[in-house]
Length: 564
Ligand code: FES
Ligand code: MG
Image 1 (cartoon, rainbow, N blue to C red):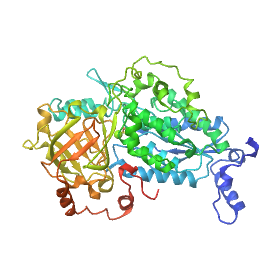
Image 2: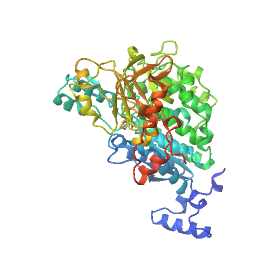
Image 3: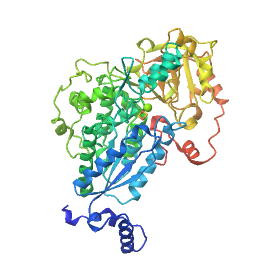
């Protein structure tokens, strides 16, 4: 559409019923008080969602990124108008940021709909932010682009490179085992999170940034540039410029980008990344909103064709800055090209095949991205299990699990999420061996909002005698930066009367990852008898938590609210 025919969103969407002229008059009167005249307001409006907060340290540099996006919008002849949405910092949000992912998705979706804008740029980064924004985008009819703050840089302590949060967990594990003193870990603390930006490893934040870029909801090359780099700001400016083009076109709507082919590409990338288990819940939720039929089983069958290629913690040895210097996601996509459907077209307007002509094959100088013929690990980095303990599915990151525990049968040791788990597991007389299977329950979406509690600490007495991994099973999630033989997202959850609720200490549990099975070796009639006696815990009394617990879907369906 030629520019002179453009009618700004300021005039198109109405505020007063029955008198459109009065609505336009009022809007321009109020915007005049903000310093905007008709020259400003006759342009395409790009709304920019801002998610800064003193509680969200990962987004500390977002004001500079916002400035870059605004500059891009202005350069391309648009008007940038930013607006806040809820900000979810992973570490400071209790009981878990996951409880608020759907609230953020609602907030973002409704603001995109309510405020006059011709296109939106959503600024995010920290774990739940990108999933919530993708969900909001999928429910939106306006063109939407995502931009992330990017990962933090690494630090260094006593000659070791450090980066949140895999190293935070490793150091704390050594502290629990008695190998590092309190003053050691206090000293190391200041080197774990050295800059603004999202976690330094392939945790949930970077995994989901890579998902957003692969899906085509972010301009190419946007997932990995560091938060503190000029490249991040240049990408932000390019995003602002492109948003104006989308605003003028009024297309594509996110649902045109979020196709089944785009999701299949993303699942393959996830497998090559050895990405976060949380991506399975988030991607199912985004697909559901986009009207794409995507099941947990798809992650196993589609991902099973692609080996682990990216050598980043927690599945490998390196950090996000190394992945970025090796070419980042575009270089990985180039390596994966034979596996991908390259006719997909994202918000850049170019097909993936076309975008990949810009990428040099094997530009890698740090060997962080391994070639398909010499992968870091076998296919199946993320496996979906079913069995009598998880009839609707459970997930495990096999690439971060211990090979010796991939097939394991052991007696259960059960803890419930509302117990004082730390003091139970620290008990020097605890009756557990390394062969025990630690079971955590009542930590699913209904019971607790699905916290990242699934990587239970190794009981202190075992940690001190050298045990670093045990089979752990729960209806919780775990952090994307965690590692270990940890089975997560057991569905149905215990609070919904799932079989986890029937497990008792000493019951035998069998994990068989090659067979994709997770079974409670207790007679079915006995399990049914125990479940008949089960009383679900009471729901929260009021407010968001009540609405959430009453309407949240199970994790195998994305844990969105049923009516969204
Ligand atoms: Fe924000 Fe890890 S805490 S990305
Ligand atoms: Mg995390």
